[in-house]
Image 1: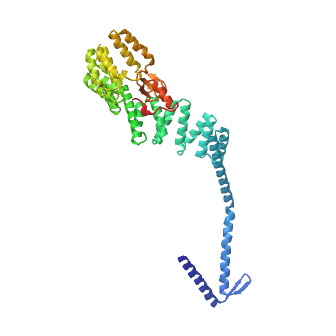
Image 2: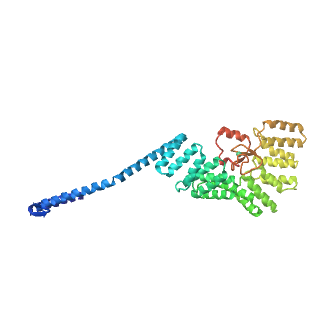
Image 3: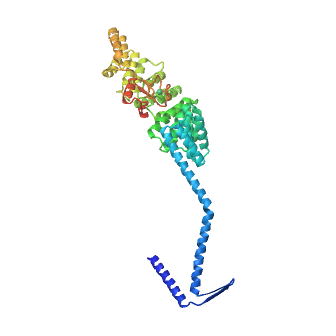
Length: 446
Ligand SMILES: [Zn+2]
């Protein structure tokens, strides 16, 4: 509306001006360079306006002509740019399709057309990797390292390369750098954690877990479990027994179901003459997760003690989980050592009712009958051993290796926190469930 008003006012003024001029034509006389011109004022003004308009166009045309080479240059650059990105796209497609030759050709083309931008470096590195030329790939990754925008990506490439050739030391160095750059990247946390564990860098691994948990990059339960195991490793490593005890107790508080930390803490307490405190700690551990290593530890604490008194100590130990099979077995074993045949027999009764009793239960029954002089009964138990369920062992849920003692790292596959107290038959169930998938961490250690 305002526009229209302005337009109308403009036209009005123009018409008014023209009428005003037409009413006052006047006369203009010009003598110049032998030319004599006689005209009216409005015509002169019209000629002047036309001349100004023409001049403006001439100036524009001149500017356009001067700028022509620049325009051509820009067009050429744009064309190179477009071709470069087309090559990049073709190269990336070739990488995805597993065609190293084409990928390499397009990488070179993109490199010459795009003056080595980060993307063409990445494509060149990927193409070299695809072609199996690790040396060239390293060179490209090194070049990427020098650019801020590709530094992190280059570190990932270098870590993958180092792991591929088994150079864990280089991989760890690069993983530490990558973590310093982006501490929130999940793959960096995973890779760095694995490498630190292999290096037995417990303290640094613990720090990584703590920081990752604080930033909600690791599940709380997993972080707690890992923290407990790493603290236990630090306790094992410590030469100061007081400090070791403190660490072992912290590990126990974090994860009471891990018997190893209770055993270490109890052993250290025993060495200080605090036998009863050690026994209380073992009782708490038994309630959390009954495991034979706790009875063994209690036995070593009660060395020289009367066998009957030890039965009472074992009964106290297992009181927190009386129905667990380990509790029945622990009491039976202690009673057997004390030659309390009846007590041993009655302790085993509930576990004998199982469809397939464990081999160790049958062996204990054979020993009780032998102790009581019933040799034929004893032999009958031994005959049943072939159909018995296997005894539990520390079993690696990743590779299936068996171990007598718990350790944070599987002696066979070096996986962290993979040992669980299981019957080897558990492996068959695992294979049935999924022949390839790894057991979940929460299955471990119970
Ligand atoms: Zn293993």
